[in-house]
Length: 320
Image (cartoon, rainbow, N blue to C red; front, top):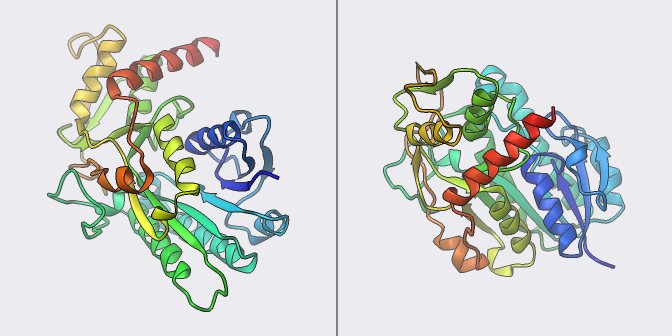
């Protein structure tokens, strides 16, 4: 029998792509998703789908009791802005939800867990591209809950009273973009937000001066990193950046999106707004550790992936 892999949040943007790779590599995928932002129609037809929530242990227990070889824990509240609007909900999903998953791994002796961490935990740093050795300095509630969850994952794995080896890895993902990212969710994914704005004829809003930079990594590359990590013993106990190492400013991103639709700032409305709470100034990944431990490097450049994503977005918009 092939490995049975539980993917929490597996109907979401990143999770559904990971499930596709799992199935392509001959593994059995079980998806748990509450569909708050995910869509079961994105789940591969060969995967088992269960509607449920990581904040409810009763939803988790039957899945673990049926036997799980590895857990890919991707479910989470992913909006920095929402984390400031409702810190308790952010904490409940990102940290307490992770603790629920860890409790199940412990009770059912699951040997492998990979956790969806975030580049936001680095906060404001002058060390860009940023290696994993840089001390975390979270500046948003979201980043705090992700870092807390990451530490729960690694400290749990170090416990000597578990009675078995729980091998964990945290993947600190940078700005993931690509097909299936929501074009209507104003709380996450600046690239998708800009595309959605233009498709609907809405002004693009740039917060602060637009010179803040992000490391955009395509979801197909991210999904490959996740599945590569499952059977990579060198990654056990490690935190690993998943990005490209290339920084793009928000101003540049805006101009690229406008150009793809045949616009410029002279022909399309672009408005300024104050900086958002928790907004990082500079961000790019040092991916040396991913190369060394996973043999992974990104294969899709932004010059390839961004036009591909815009083409997909146009098709989705036209079909509606």
